[in-house]
Amino acid sequence: MTIDVLNYLCCPACGSDLESRNTSVSCTLGHEFPIRNGVPDLVQSTRAAAAISDTFSVQWSRYEYGQDHTWSHSLDDRIDGFLAHLGIDSEWLRDKAILDAGCGNGELTNEVALRFRPRMFGTDISESVYRAHQQFGANVSFFRSNLSDSVLRPERFDAIYCGGVLHHTPDTRHALGQLAPAVKPAGRIYVWLYWKIPTLVYRAKTALRRFVAPLPPRAQQPIVSVFTAASWIRHGGRTGWRDHRLVQHDFWTPRYRWEHSPDEVIGWLHDLGFSDVSLQSQARDGFGLLAVR
Ligand SMILES: C[S@@+](CC[C@H](N)C(=O)[O-])C[C@H]1O[C@@H](n2cnc3c(N)ncnc32)[C@H](O)[C@@H]1O
Ligand SMILES: [Zn+2]
Image 1: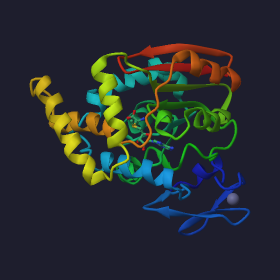
Image 2: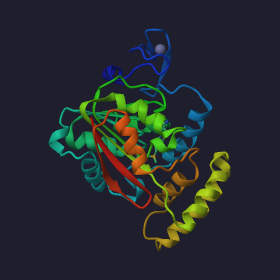
Image 3: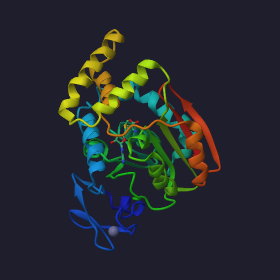
Image 4: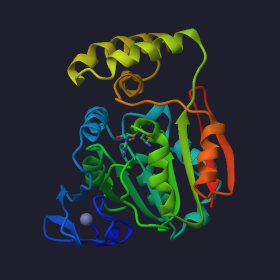
């Protein structure tokens, strides 16, 4: 762990500053959090946090670095997307403080750090941060946190990138409200969220998902496998089985998976003090908003 990361964080229990001890970090009021595998773990134990972490920890524990593709994209494409989504170029990033909020496997986080040399931070509620730290800890400061908690010091980050994360928390609006104050004046935030797909098949799958998501991980696996096979066959077996399984696991297993509309979230961002909000990307299953303070 680099000590520097603590300058960006605060105690999720009381908001005060954190300092490092040998095997833990603690706040001025005495709340203590372990450092696990070199990574500060600021997740407070709740049933919701455990439910979220469990499914995503399984998801990312299966990810094979250097072989698998996240969301079936190449790293080059993901980097292009990252720059376009934030509306910046590589020069902009130099020496800036950037947070990948809900960084998953940390591969994109690392690639941004390697190519453009910002001060790069990655956080996630799942155990993925431990593997990410092992792989990429030389380039990125990882910490484990729950974005539903207030864990970031105000006005610390030039940009926050949050792709496909907040709709997996119990309350998307609340989690966005915890992230937003950490953006510096004139800084920017990009959030990508699901929207409703109005097809019958999708609505049926979403309805079925409500019964699958609360099941224990072992009971979910056969359903994930069936839909992985269907997706793999539909694509003619041309792309990797594990890439299809990642996508299906990500649909069927998370406890929370809310859908929103751009107008709704644009309203939230205005309320949170962002003046300049634009629809930056659209896909079949969701949309990305860029907001500048
Ligand atoms: C669909 S994945 C996206 C990962 C990454 N942003 C990407 O685009 O590859 C959603 C991620 O959000 C994380 N996540 C969900 N709820 C979270 C929370 N409350 N706090 C922090 N991370 C959370 C999950 O653990 C998971 O890694
Ligand atoms: Zn505290």
